[in-house]
Length: 145
Image: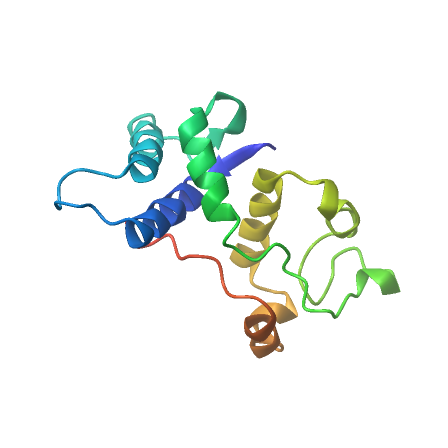
């Protein structure tokens, strides 16, 4: 799937609100406005995913700029797929996701991040959580909007 979940749109909006706050408390800077328009349409139409192909270029550029501030990979350097597991115990990705990660689009990577975070079963979320924090920072939380 090459789509962006609404929680990632929220996280990007919150990022831009911190980076470039409203100059007067009313108007929105361009990045925030572009993402807010997408978010509003998603809410209006009760959609959880925004298709990358139909996303306005300014909104997608703002989302990509936020994406560049997030950790690229959930890897914590404990890979059990190399030992034959279908899903890595360390990061939670499938064997195919680990193998194809470099070729995946940003939206596909964030979709994988969302799945493994919701599942919360990988060692990066419990047993080795401190290792995950020290190697990468956690993605922006989407709950501020």
